[in-house]
Image (cartoon, rainbow, N blue to C red; front, side, top):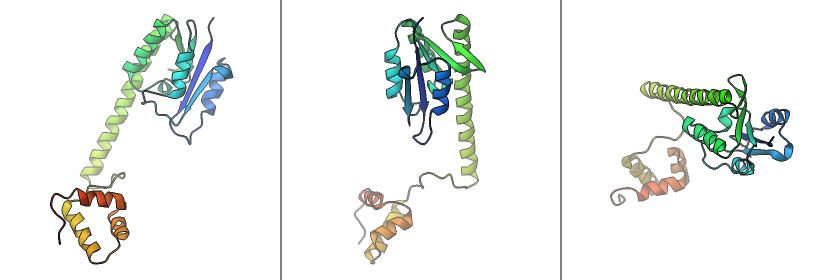
Length: 197
């Protein structure tokens, strides 16, 4: 029987992977065969420790993860990855998939993995839809959406320039607009006509 290669991932540096590591160790993964990415999104194509874990897999080995979302976000990518592993003679084991432990080495495990990957993708798309709907409702109600401020018009930038020409400090004018000095200067350079006198 091959080795168990464990992979854990947390999306931000503030999170810790202790729970995942504990579960992987309890599943039989040796500490030397454990790879952990810190502060890496599941949507990224390249994850350094994930790449090392996959490179460490040999025929007969099994990649072990705690949950499906540690692998990635797209059903198509997850299924392609599982198929690539199968082509190398390696398997994938998800410790908590649909309430149980699923191993793609078995026909039943492979089928459950396919169904659960599709459900995970659907769940992600439903979340996106809810967020889009919420943003649209907040926007329609005129509520603040947070994040980056709206773009300022050329007229607003010219008015800010007049304040500076009348003696206001650039730093203060930029701060009052809610932007950095660098952004303010960039907006000045982007004005379509010559600066007003």
